[in-house]
Every structure is written in C-alpha cells, then in structure tokens.
Length: 113
Image (cartoon, rainbow, N blue to C red; front, top):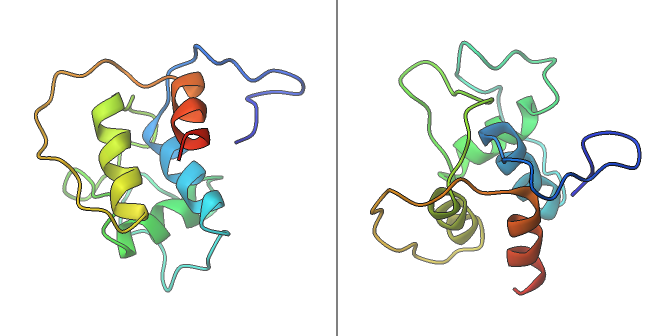
C-alpha cells in the first residue's frame, strides 16, 4: 500500500473501490489484465484502470451495470469478501451494514494474513 501523498498514509481515511482493487492487484504482483475494464467510468488512463480490469476478470469485483464507481466507499465486509476471493477462499455470505473500511484497517488485515 502506498500513501495518498508524499509522506502521508492517512490510516483513518476511507477506502474507495478503486483503492481496494489496486491494493489487491499490487499484492498479486500487478498481473497484466487480458482486456480493459468494461465500465464507462473507468478510463484506460486512470491510475486504477488495470487493477479494475484484473479484478473484474478474476471475479473479485463487479460493477453497477455499465459503471464501476471507483470513488465509492467500501465497507469492511466488502473488502473482506474481495480479499477472500482474490486469495482463493470462499467468502462469507454478504450481509451488509458493516462500517466503511479505512486504510489502516485494511493494512492491519493484510498484515495478519
């Protein structure tokens, strides 16, 4: 994981969908996706474009029809499910209502694995 600015990590900052897939893509070694993301709001020059395409191709994430919502906040439950899928584990059944994930929470979760 990288900070949001030079020397700034912002552990209490809320995680977005674009950030989440980028974290998982980085962890996987930044594999090259086979195609571009099929979402109208993910342009090929966006910093998260390859990560979204890779995560979509691997069933880690989906969109809202023809959009992805890269700036939408992600809950702890949603990130946990994405992380489980990325790591070949069967995720728990989605319940909803979990708090938003923060960068610090995600970093802690990944360190504990």
